[in-house]
Length: 322
Ligand SMILES: [Zn+2]
Image 1 (cartoon, rainbow, N blue to C red):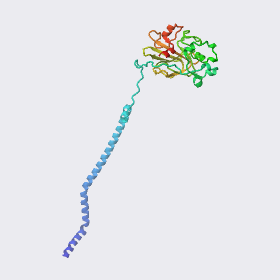
Image 2 (cartoon, rainbow, N blue to C red; image 1 turned 45 degrees about the vertical axis):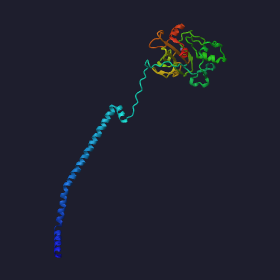
Image 3 (spheres, helix red, strand yellow; image 1 turned 90 degrees about the horizontal axis):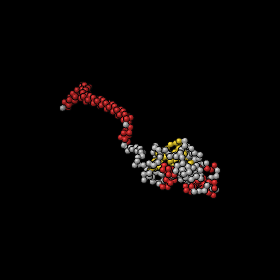
Image 4 (cartoon, rainbow, N blue to C red; image 1 turned 180 degrees about the horizontal axis):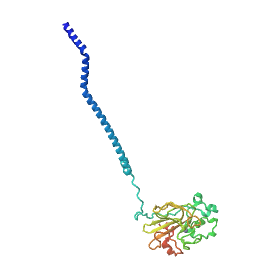
């Protein structure tokens, strides 16, 4: 038995020793052949995948370039629309163009004197004092606006003394009365002056005397820089307040003005000898002789009171009445 086993093992061993090399080669070749198709297919799949990845990458690149190009074109052509789409923020609508229509024209609700305070002219003794500009004066140099009738009924100028400071201040402030002559003692309807002259310091802020719309901002050698504001009363009356000899204007034609709103500064532009405000209120009606387009009314002769009031009205009465 042992003999057979021994032979068997011997056979085995001899077979093994004789053919183990070939066997190893056969096994390796078999394994290689067995695995080869799988390897090839895997290799092919790998190559294919690489190609797909490359193609996808290239396609992505093309797509990105196309997208960037399209965006750039869109940016150029429709920047606002692009902004709306990307930002998704509410776009503020543009401010409406301010057009003064007949319905929107502001009706006079309030009137006010064109200045809030005046220099106390009667208390100033030297040119150095009274020639100062508004900004150079101190708070103590100003007094409240005096009553117009006080100036009209005051004594002649040369009879006034240092004790009559308020009267002197009033007479100097209302230096030319409504249709008065250029004389500090002249009363109304003694001249051809269609308004009143208010003596002020250079640079005094001037406000519109009533609610309205700026009609004219212009300049000429006589009136200097002047502003005209149109006013309409609730009853349908129409007026034009005119502010002449201004140093600067701070409003433009078409601006809506509230009573008391600053429109410019007092100056001495045009035909003037000292800083003052020429304030005039023209009446616009079928009876008036005002030309259109509007010009401030300026009679070339001394009109009667009736004629004067047909075309203009005393600005101080206008302020009191409306
Ligand atoms: Zn004047």
